[in-house]
Length: 112
Image (cartoon, rainbow, N blue to C red):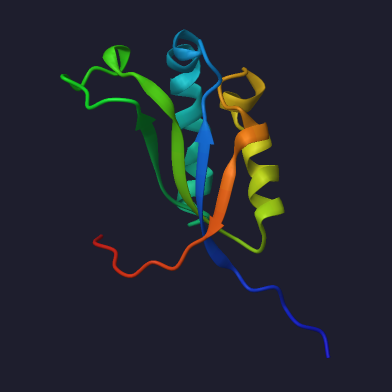
């Protein structure tokens, strides 16, 4: 009897490489544009920037970026890594994919 792989949620933490803030801001519009299909399909449920400190303004150019965090739906960690490899933050050198952390995640509550 063959089993169908089960879709699970994962919490993903991807640190930025040091000194990549300017590159992150440069490619950010493309990053957001390319996320649309993953968000629409429900594969990526939540995402955003991790910061080293609380920002004093809502201006991304003032943020002290640490990396990004995501909640993704996938069959495996490997599937998520393959999705991440296609992101412009990886190809432009912003995200340090060698240091990505991916954990199985069970959501206790979610407010739409």
